[in-house]
Image 1 (cartoon, rainbow, N blue to C red):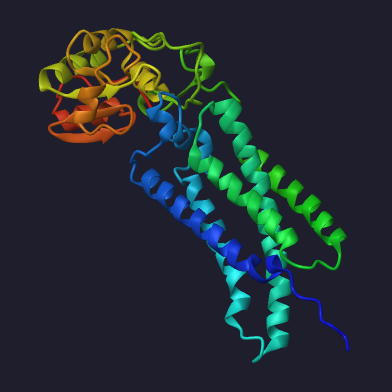
Image 2 (cartoon, one colour; image 1 turned 90 degrees about the vertical axis):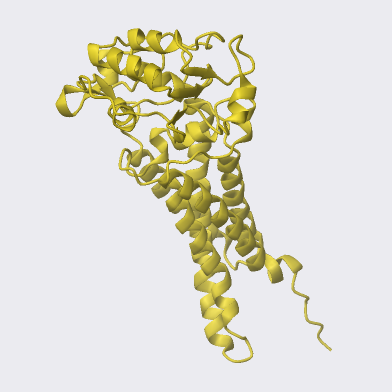
Length: 345
């Protein structure tokens, strides 16, 4: 009598586990996509601890594909996770006792697709982890979770079935990995060239001239030295008459700006106003410092106002999250003075 070998448990449940992890990835990327498209603020543990975090990552040039297109990176992750869910569960829709041959063929095809997807996602996530750690210098738990999910797919795909030819896995990994890496470097190749704005510095190479002669900020969020707890980083842009008059109008209108001295995007907002206009704002009660580490910090006021990210403007009872262009601030506050603002994002 010949005893049949029992199927390892990982082979029986690998597709279910992959689908479950992909489901978590789908929920995560759907949330990030929604917040990015609606210009909301992502809840992030790192930022509450006073460090650059998820919102810094999502507002960086790497968070859009193509770069500068406005199409959020998380939406591609959402599609990738949904694809992994489909590849994992599709063969299970066919009962083996009804059509064993068709199910077997579908299993072989989808295993190969799962392998290709897992390799591509792992390589791409590894690149983004490098960018997050060394270029943006932020901590994003959602990004780390996504990279972990991708690596889990790769491990489960390899050990989750009996591969007849491990050479196929190696060959596929080399080809897919190289194509993914070359494509990734091609997509993000423009970032860093031509001199992106480095916080605390403005040079002719750090800006581009936009419509109406305005200077377009296209910054790579980062830090030049440590911010001063009293005022953050040095403001190196100069204000025009329009910026100064708008600042004076904002003070009279009762607007409030909630920010933190360590926040890169708060510094971007200052750069858009310029040194002279920012002085008008800082010498009034319009600015509220939310960082407890600052001698000017009033975290209780920020908490009472329901502030979840920085900078946040409250104008006429309505919140405006993120860096605001001056023409938008002029519009929502009814400013009618000169509007030949020098800078915009």
